[in-house]
Amino acid sequence: MRPRTILCSTLLLLALCAGCGAQADTEEPAEPSERSFFAMNTYITMQASGTHAEDALEAAEELVLDLEGLLSVTEETSELYEINHSEGQPVAVDETTAELLTFALEMAEETGGALDPTIYPVLTAWGFTTDSRQVPAQEEIDRLLPLVDYTQVQIANGLVTLPEGVSLDLGAVAKGYTGDRVARLLEEQGISSALINLGGNVQAVGGRPDGTPWRIGVRDPFSEGNLGVLEVEDCAVVTSGGYQNYFTGEDGQVYWHILDPDTGYPTRTGLASVTVVAPEGARCDALSTSLFVMGLDNALDYWRETGGFDLILVTEEREVYVTSGLTDAFSLNGDGFALEVVEP
Image 1 (cartoon, one colour):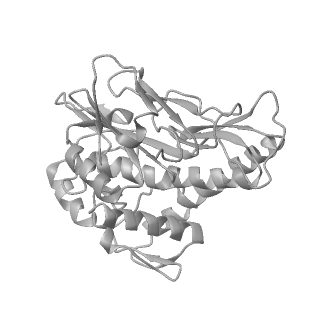
Image 2: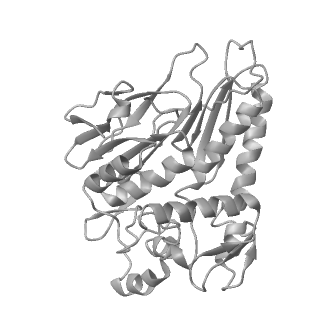
């Protein structure tokens, strides 16, 4: 059974945004409405078709900016910033913040800590949250690693409490969650066809205005081109890869932003990229990171045991593993790759 749609997360595509509601428009304009803006530290593009598309996209932009105001790790007026600087005191949070944090903690538990929202102090030490990239001293990593433990986060009755020194980053789930919220908003606005791209996290509701699936280019992790094309409708696709945010150290080695919570170093599991396709963007976002940390064999074991999503896994040896639910949806067009379909 083919999964419902979102779209791929590291696409060289102008992303579009979608939704269809109980009172969807019966007339489509000749040209879709488009909107683009900068938020959540990325360039966001949305496209929607329908009589009320302009108003719907305006409301969608307002929603994204509202969510950024709650969840930004650097904006001093955000709730997440307040939590991270609470010095061990409980902080009252909005229902949205509590919902997303609860989800992140659930995914941390489900993935055995491969996703850990308390990785932020180590991420900062590497300079991935700033413009300064550096390889931290082993002594600094050793000092910070005890702070990386999602079980230390307490959330109850609208209050979040962190031990002093522990801090959160919801970057591994926030854009996917935002895509879900935007898609739902557009559905409520009666939009019949749209795509949303939040810096590569792409979400689709419905197909193209002509009824065909959206065709999304999946990024080749070794070049600026596309690995292949994924046809999607009504679902989310998110990709994580080391090529998205990295630097070369003075030792000549490449270091990327996806860190192993156990070691505090960039994860090295032999994977070059992980693309997750599922109905929910937040789940795609969380899994694309955590499965990259797990590595090929553990990621496939997790897929077989858990279900509810599909995968495109690319190894550093240029092997492409596609789970069986995407057999008819994905076309490989990259040169020099070996393709294998994985069965449950």
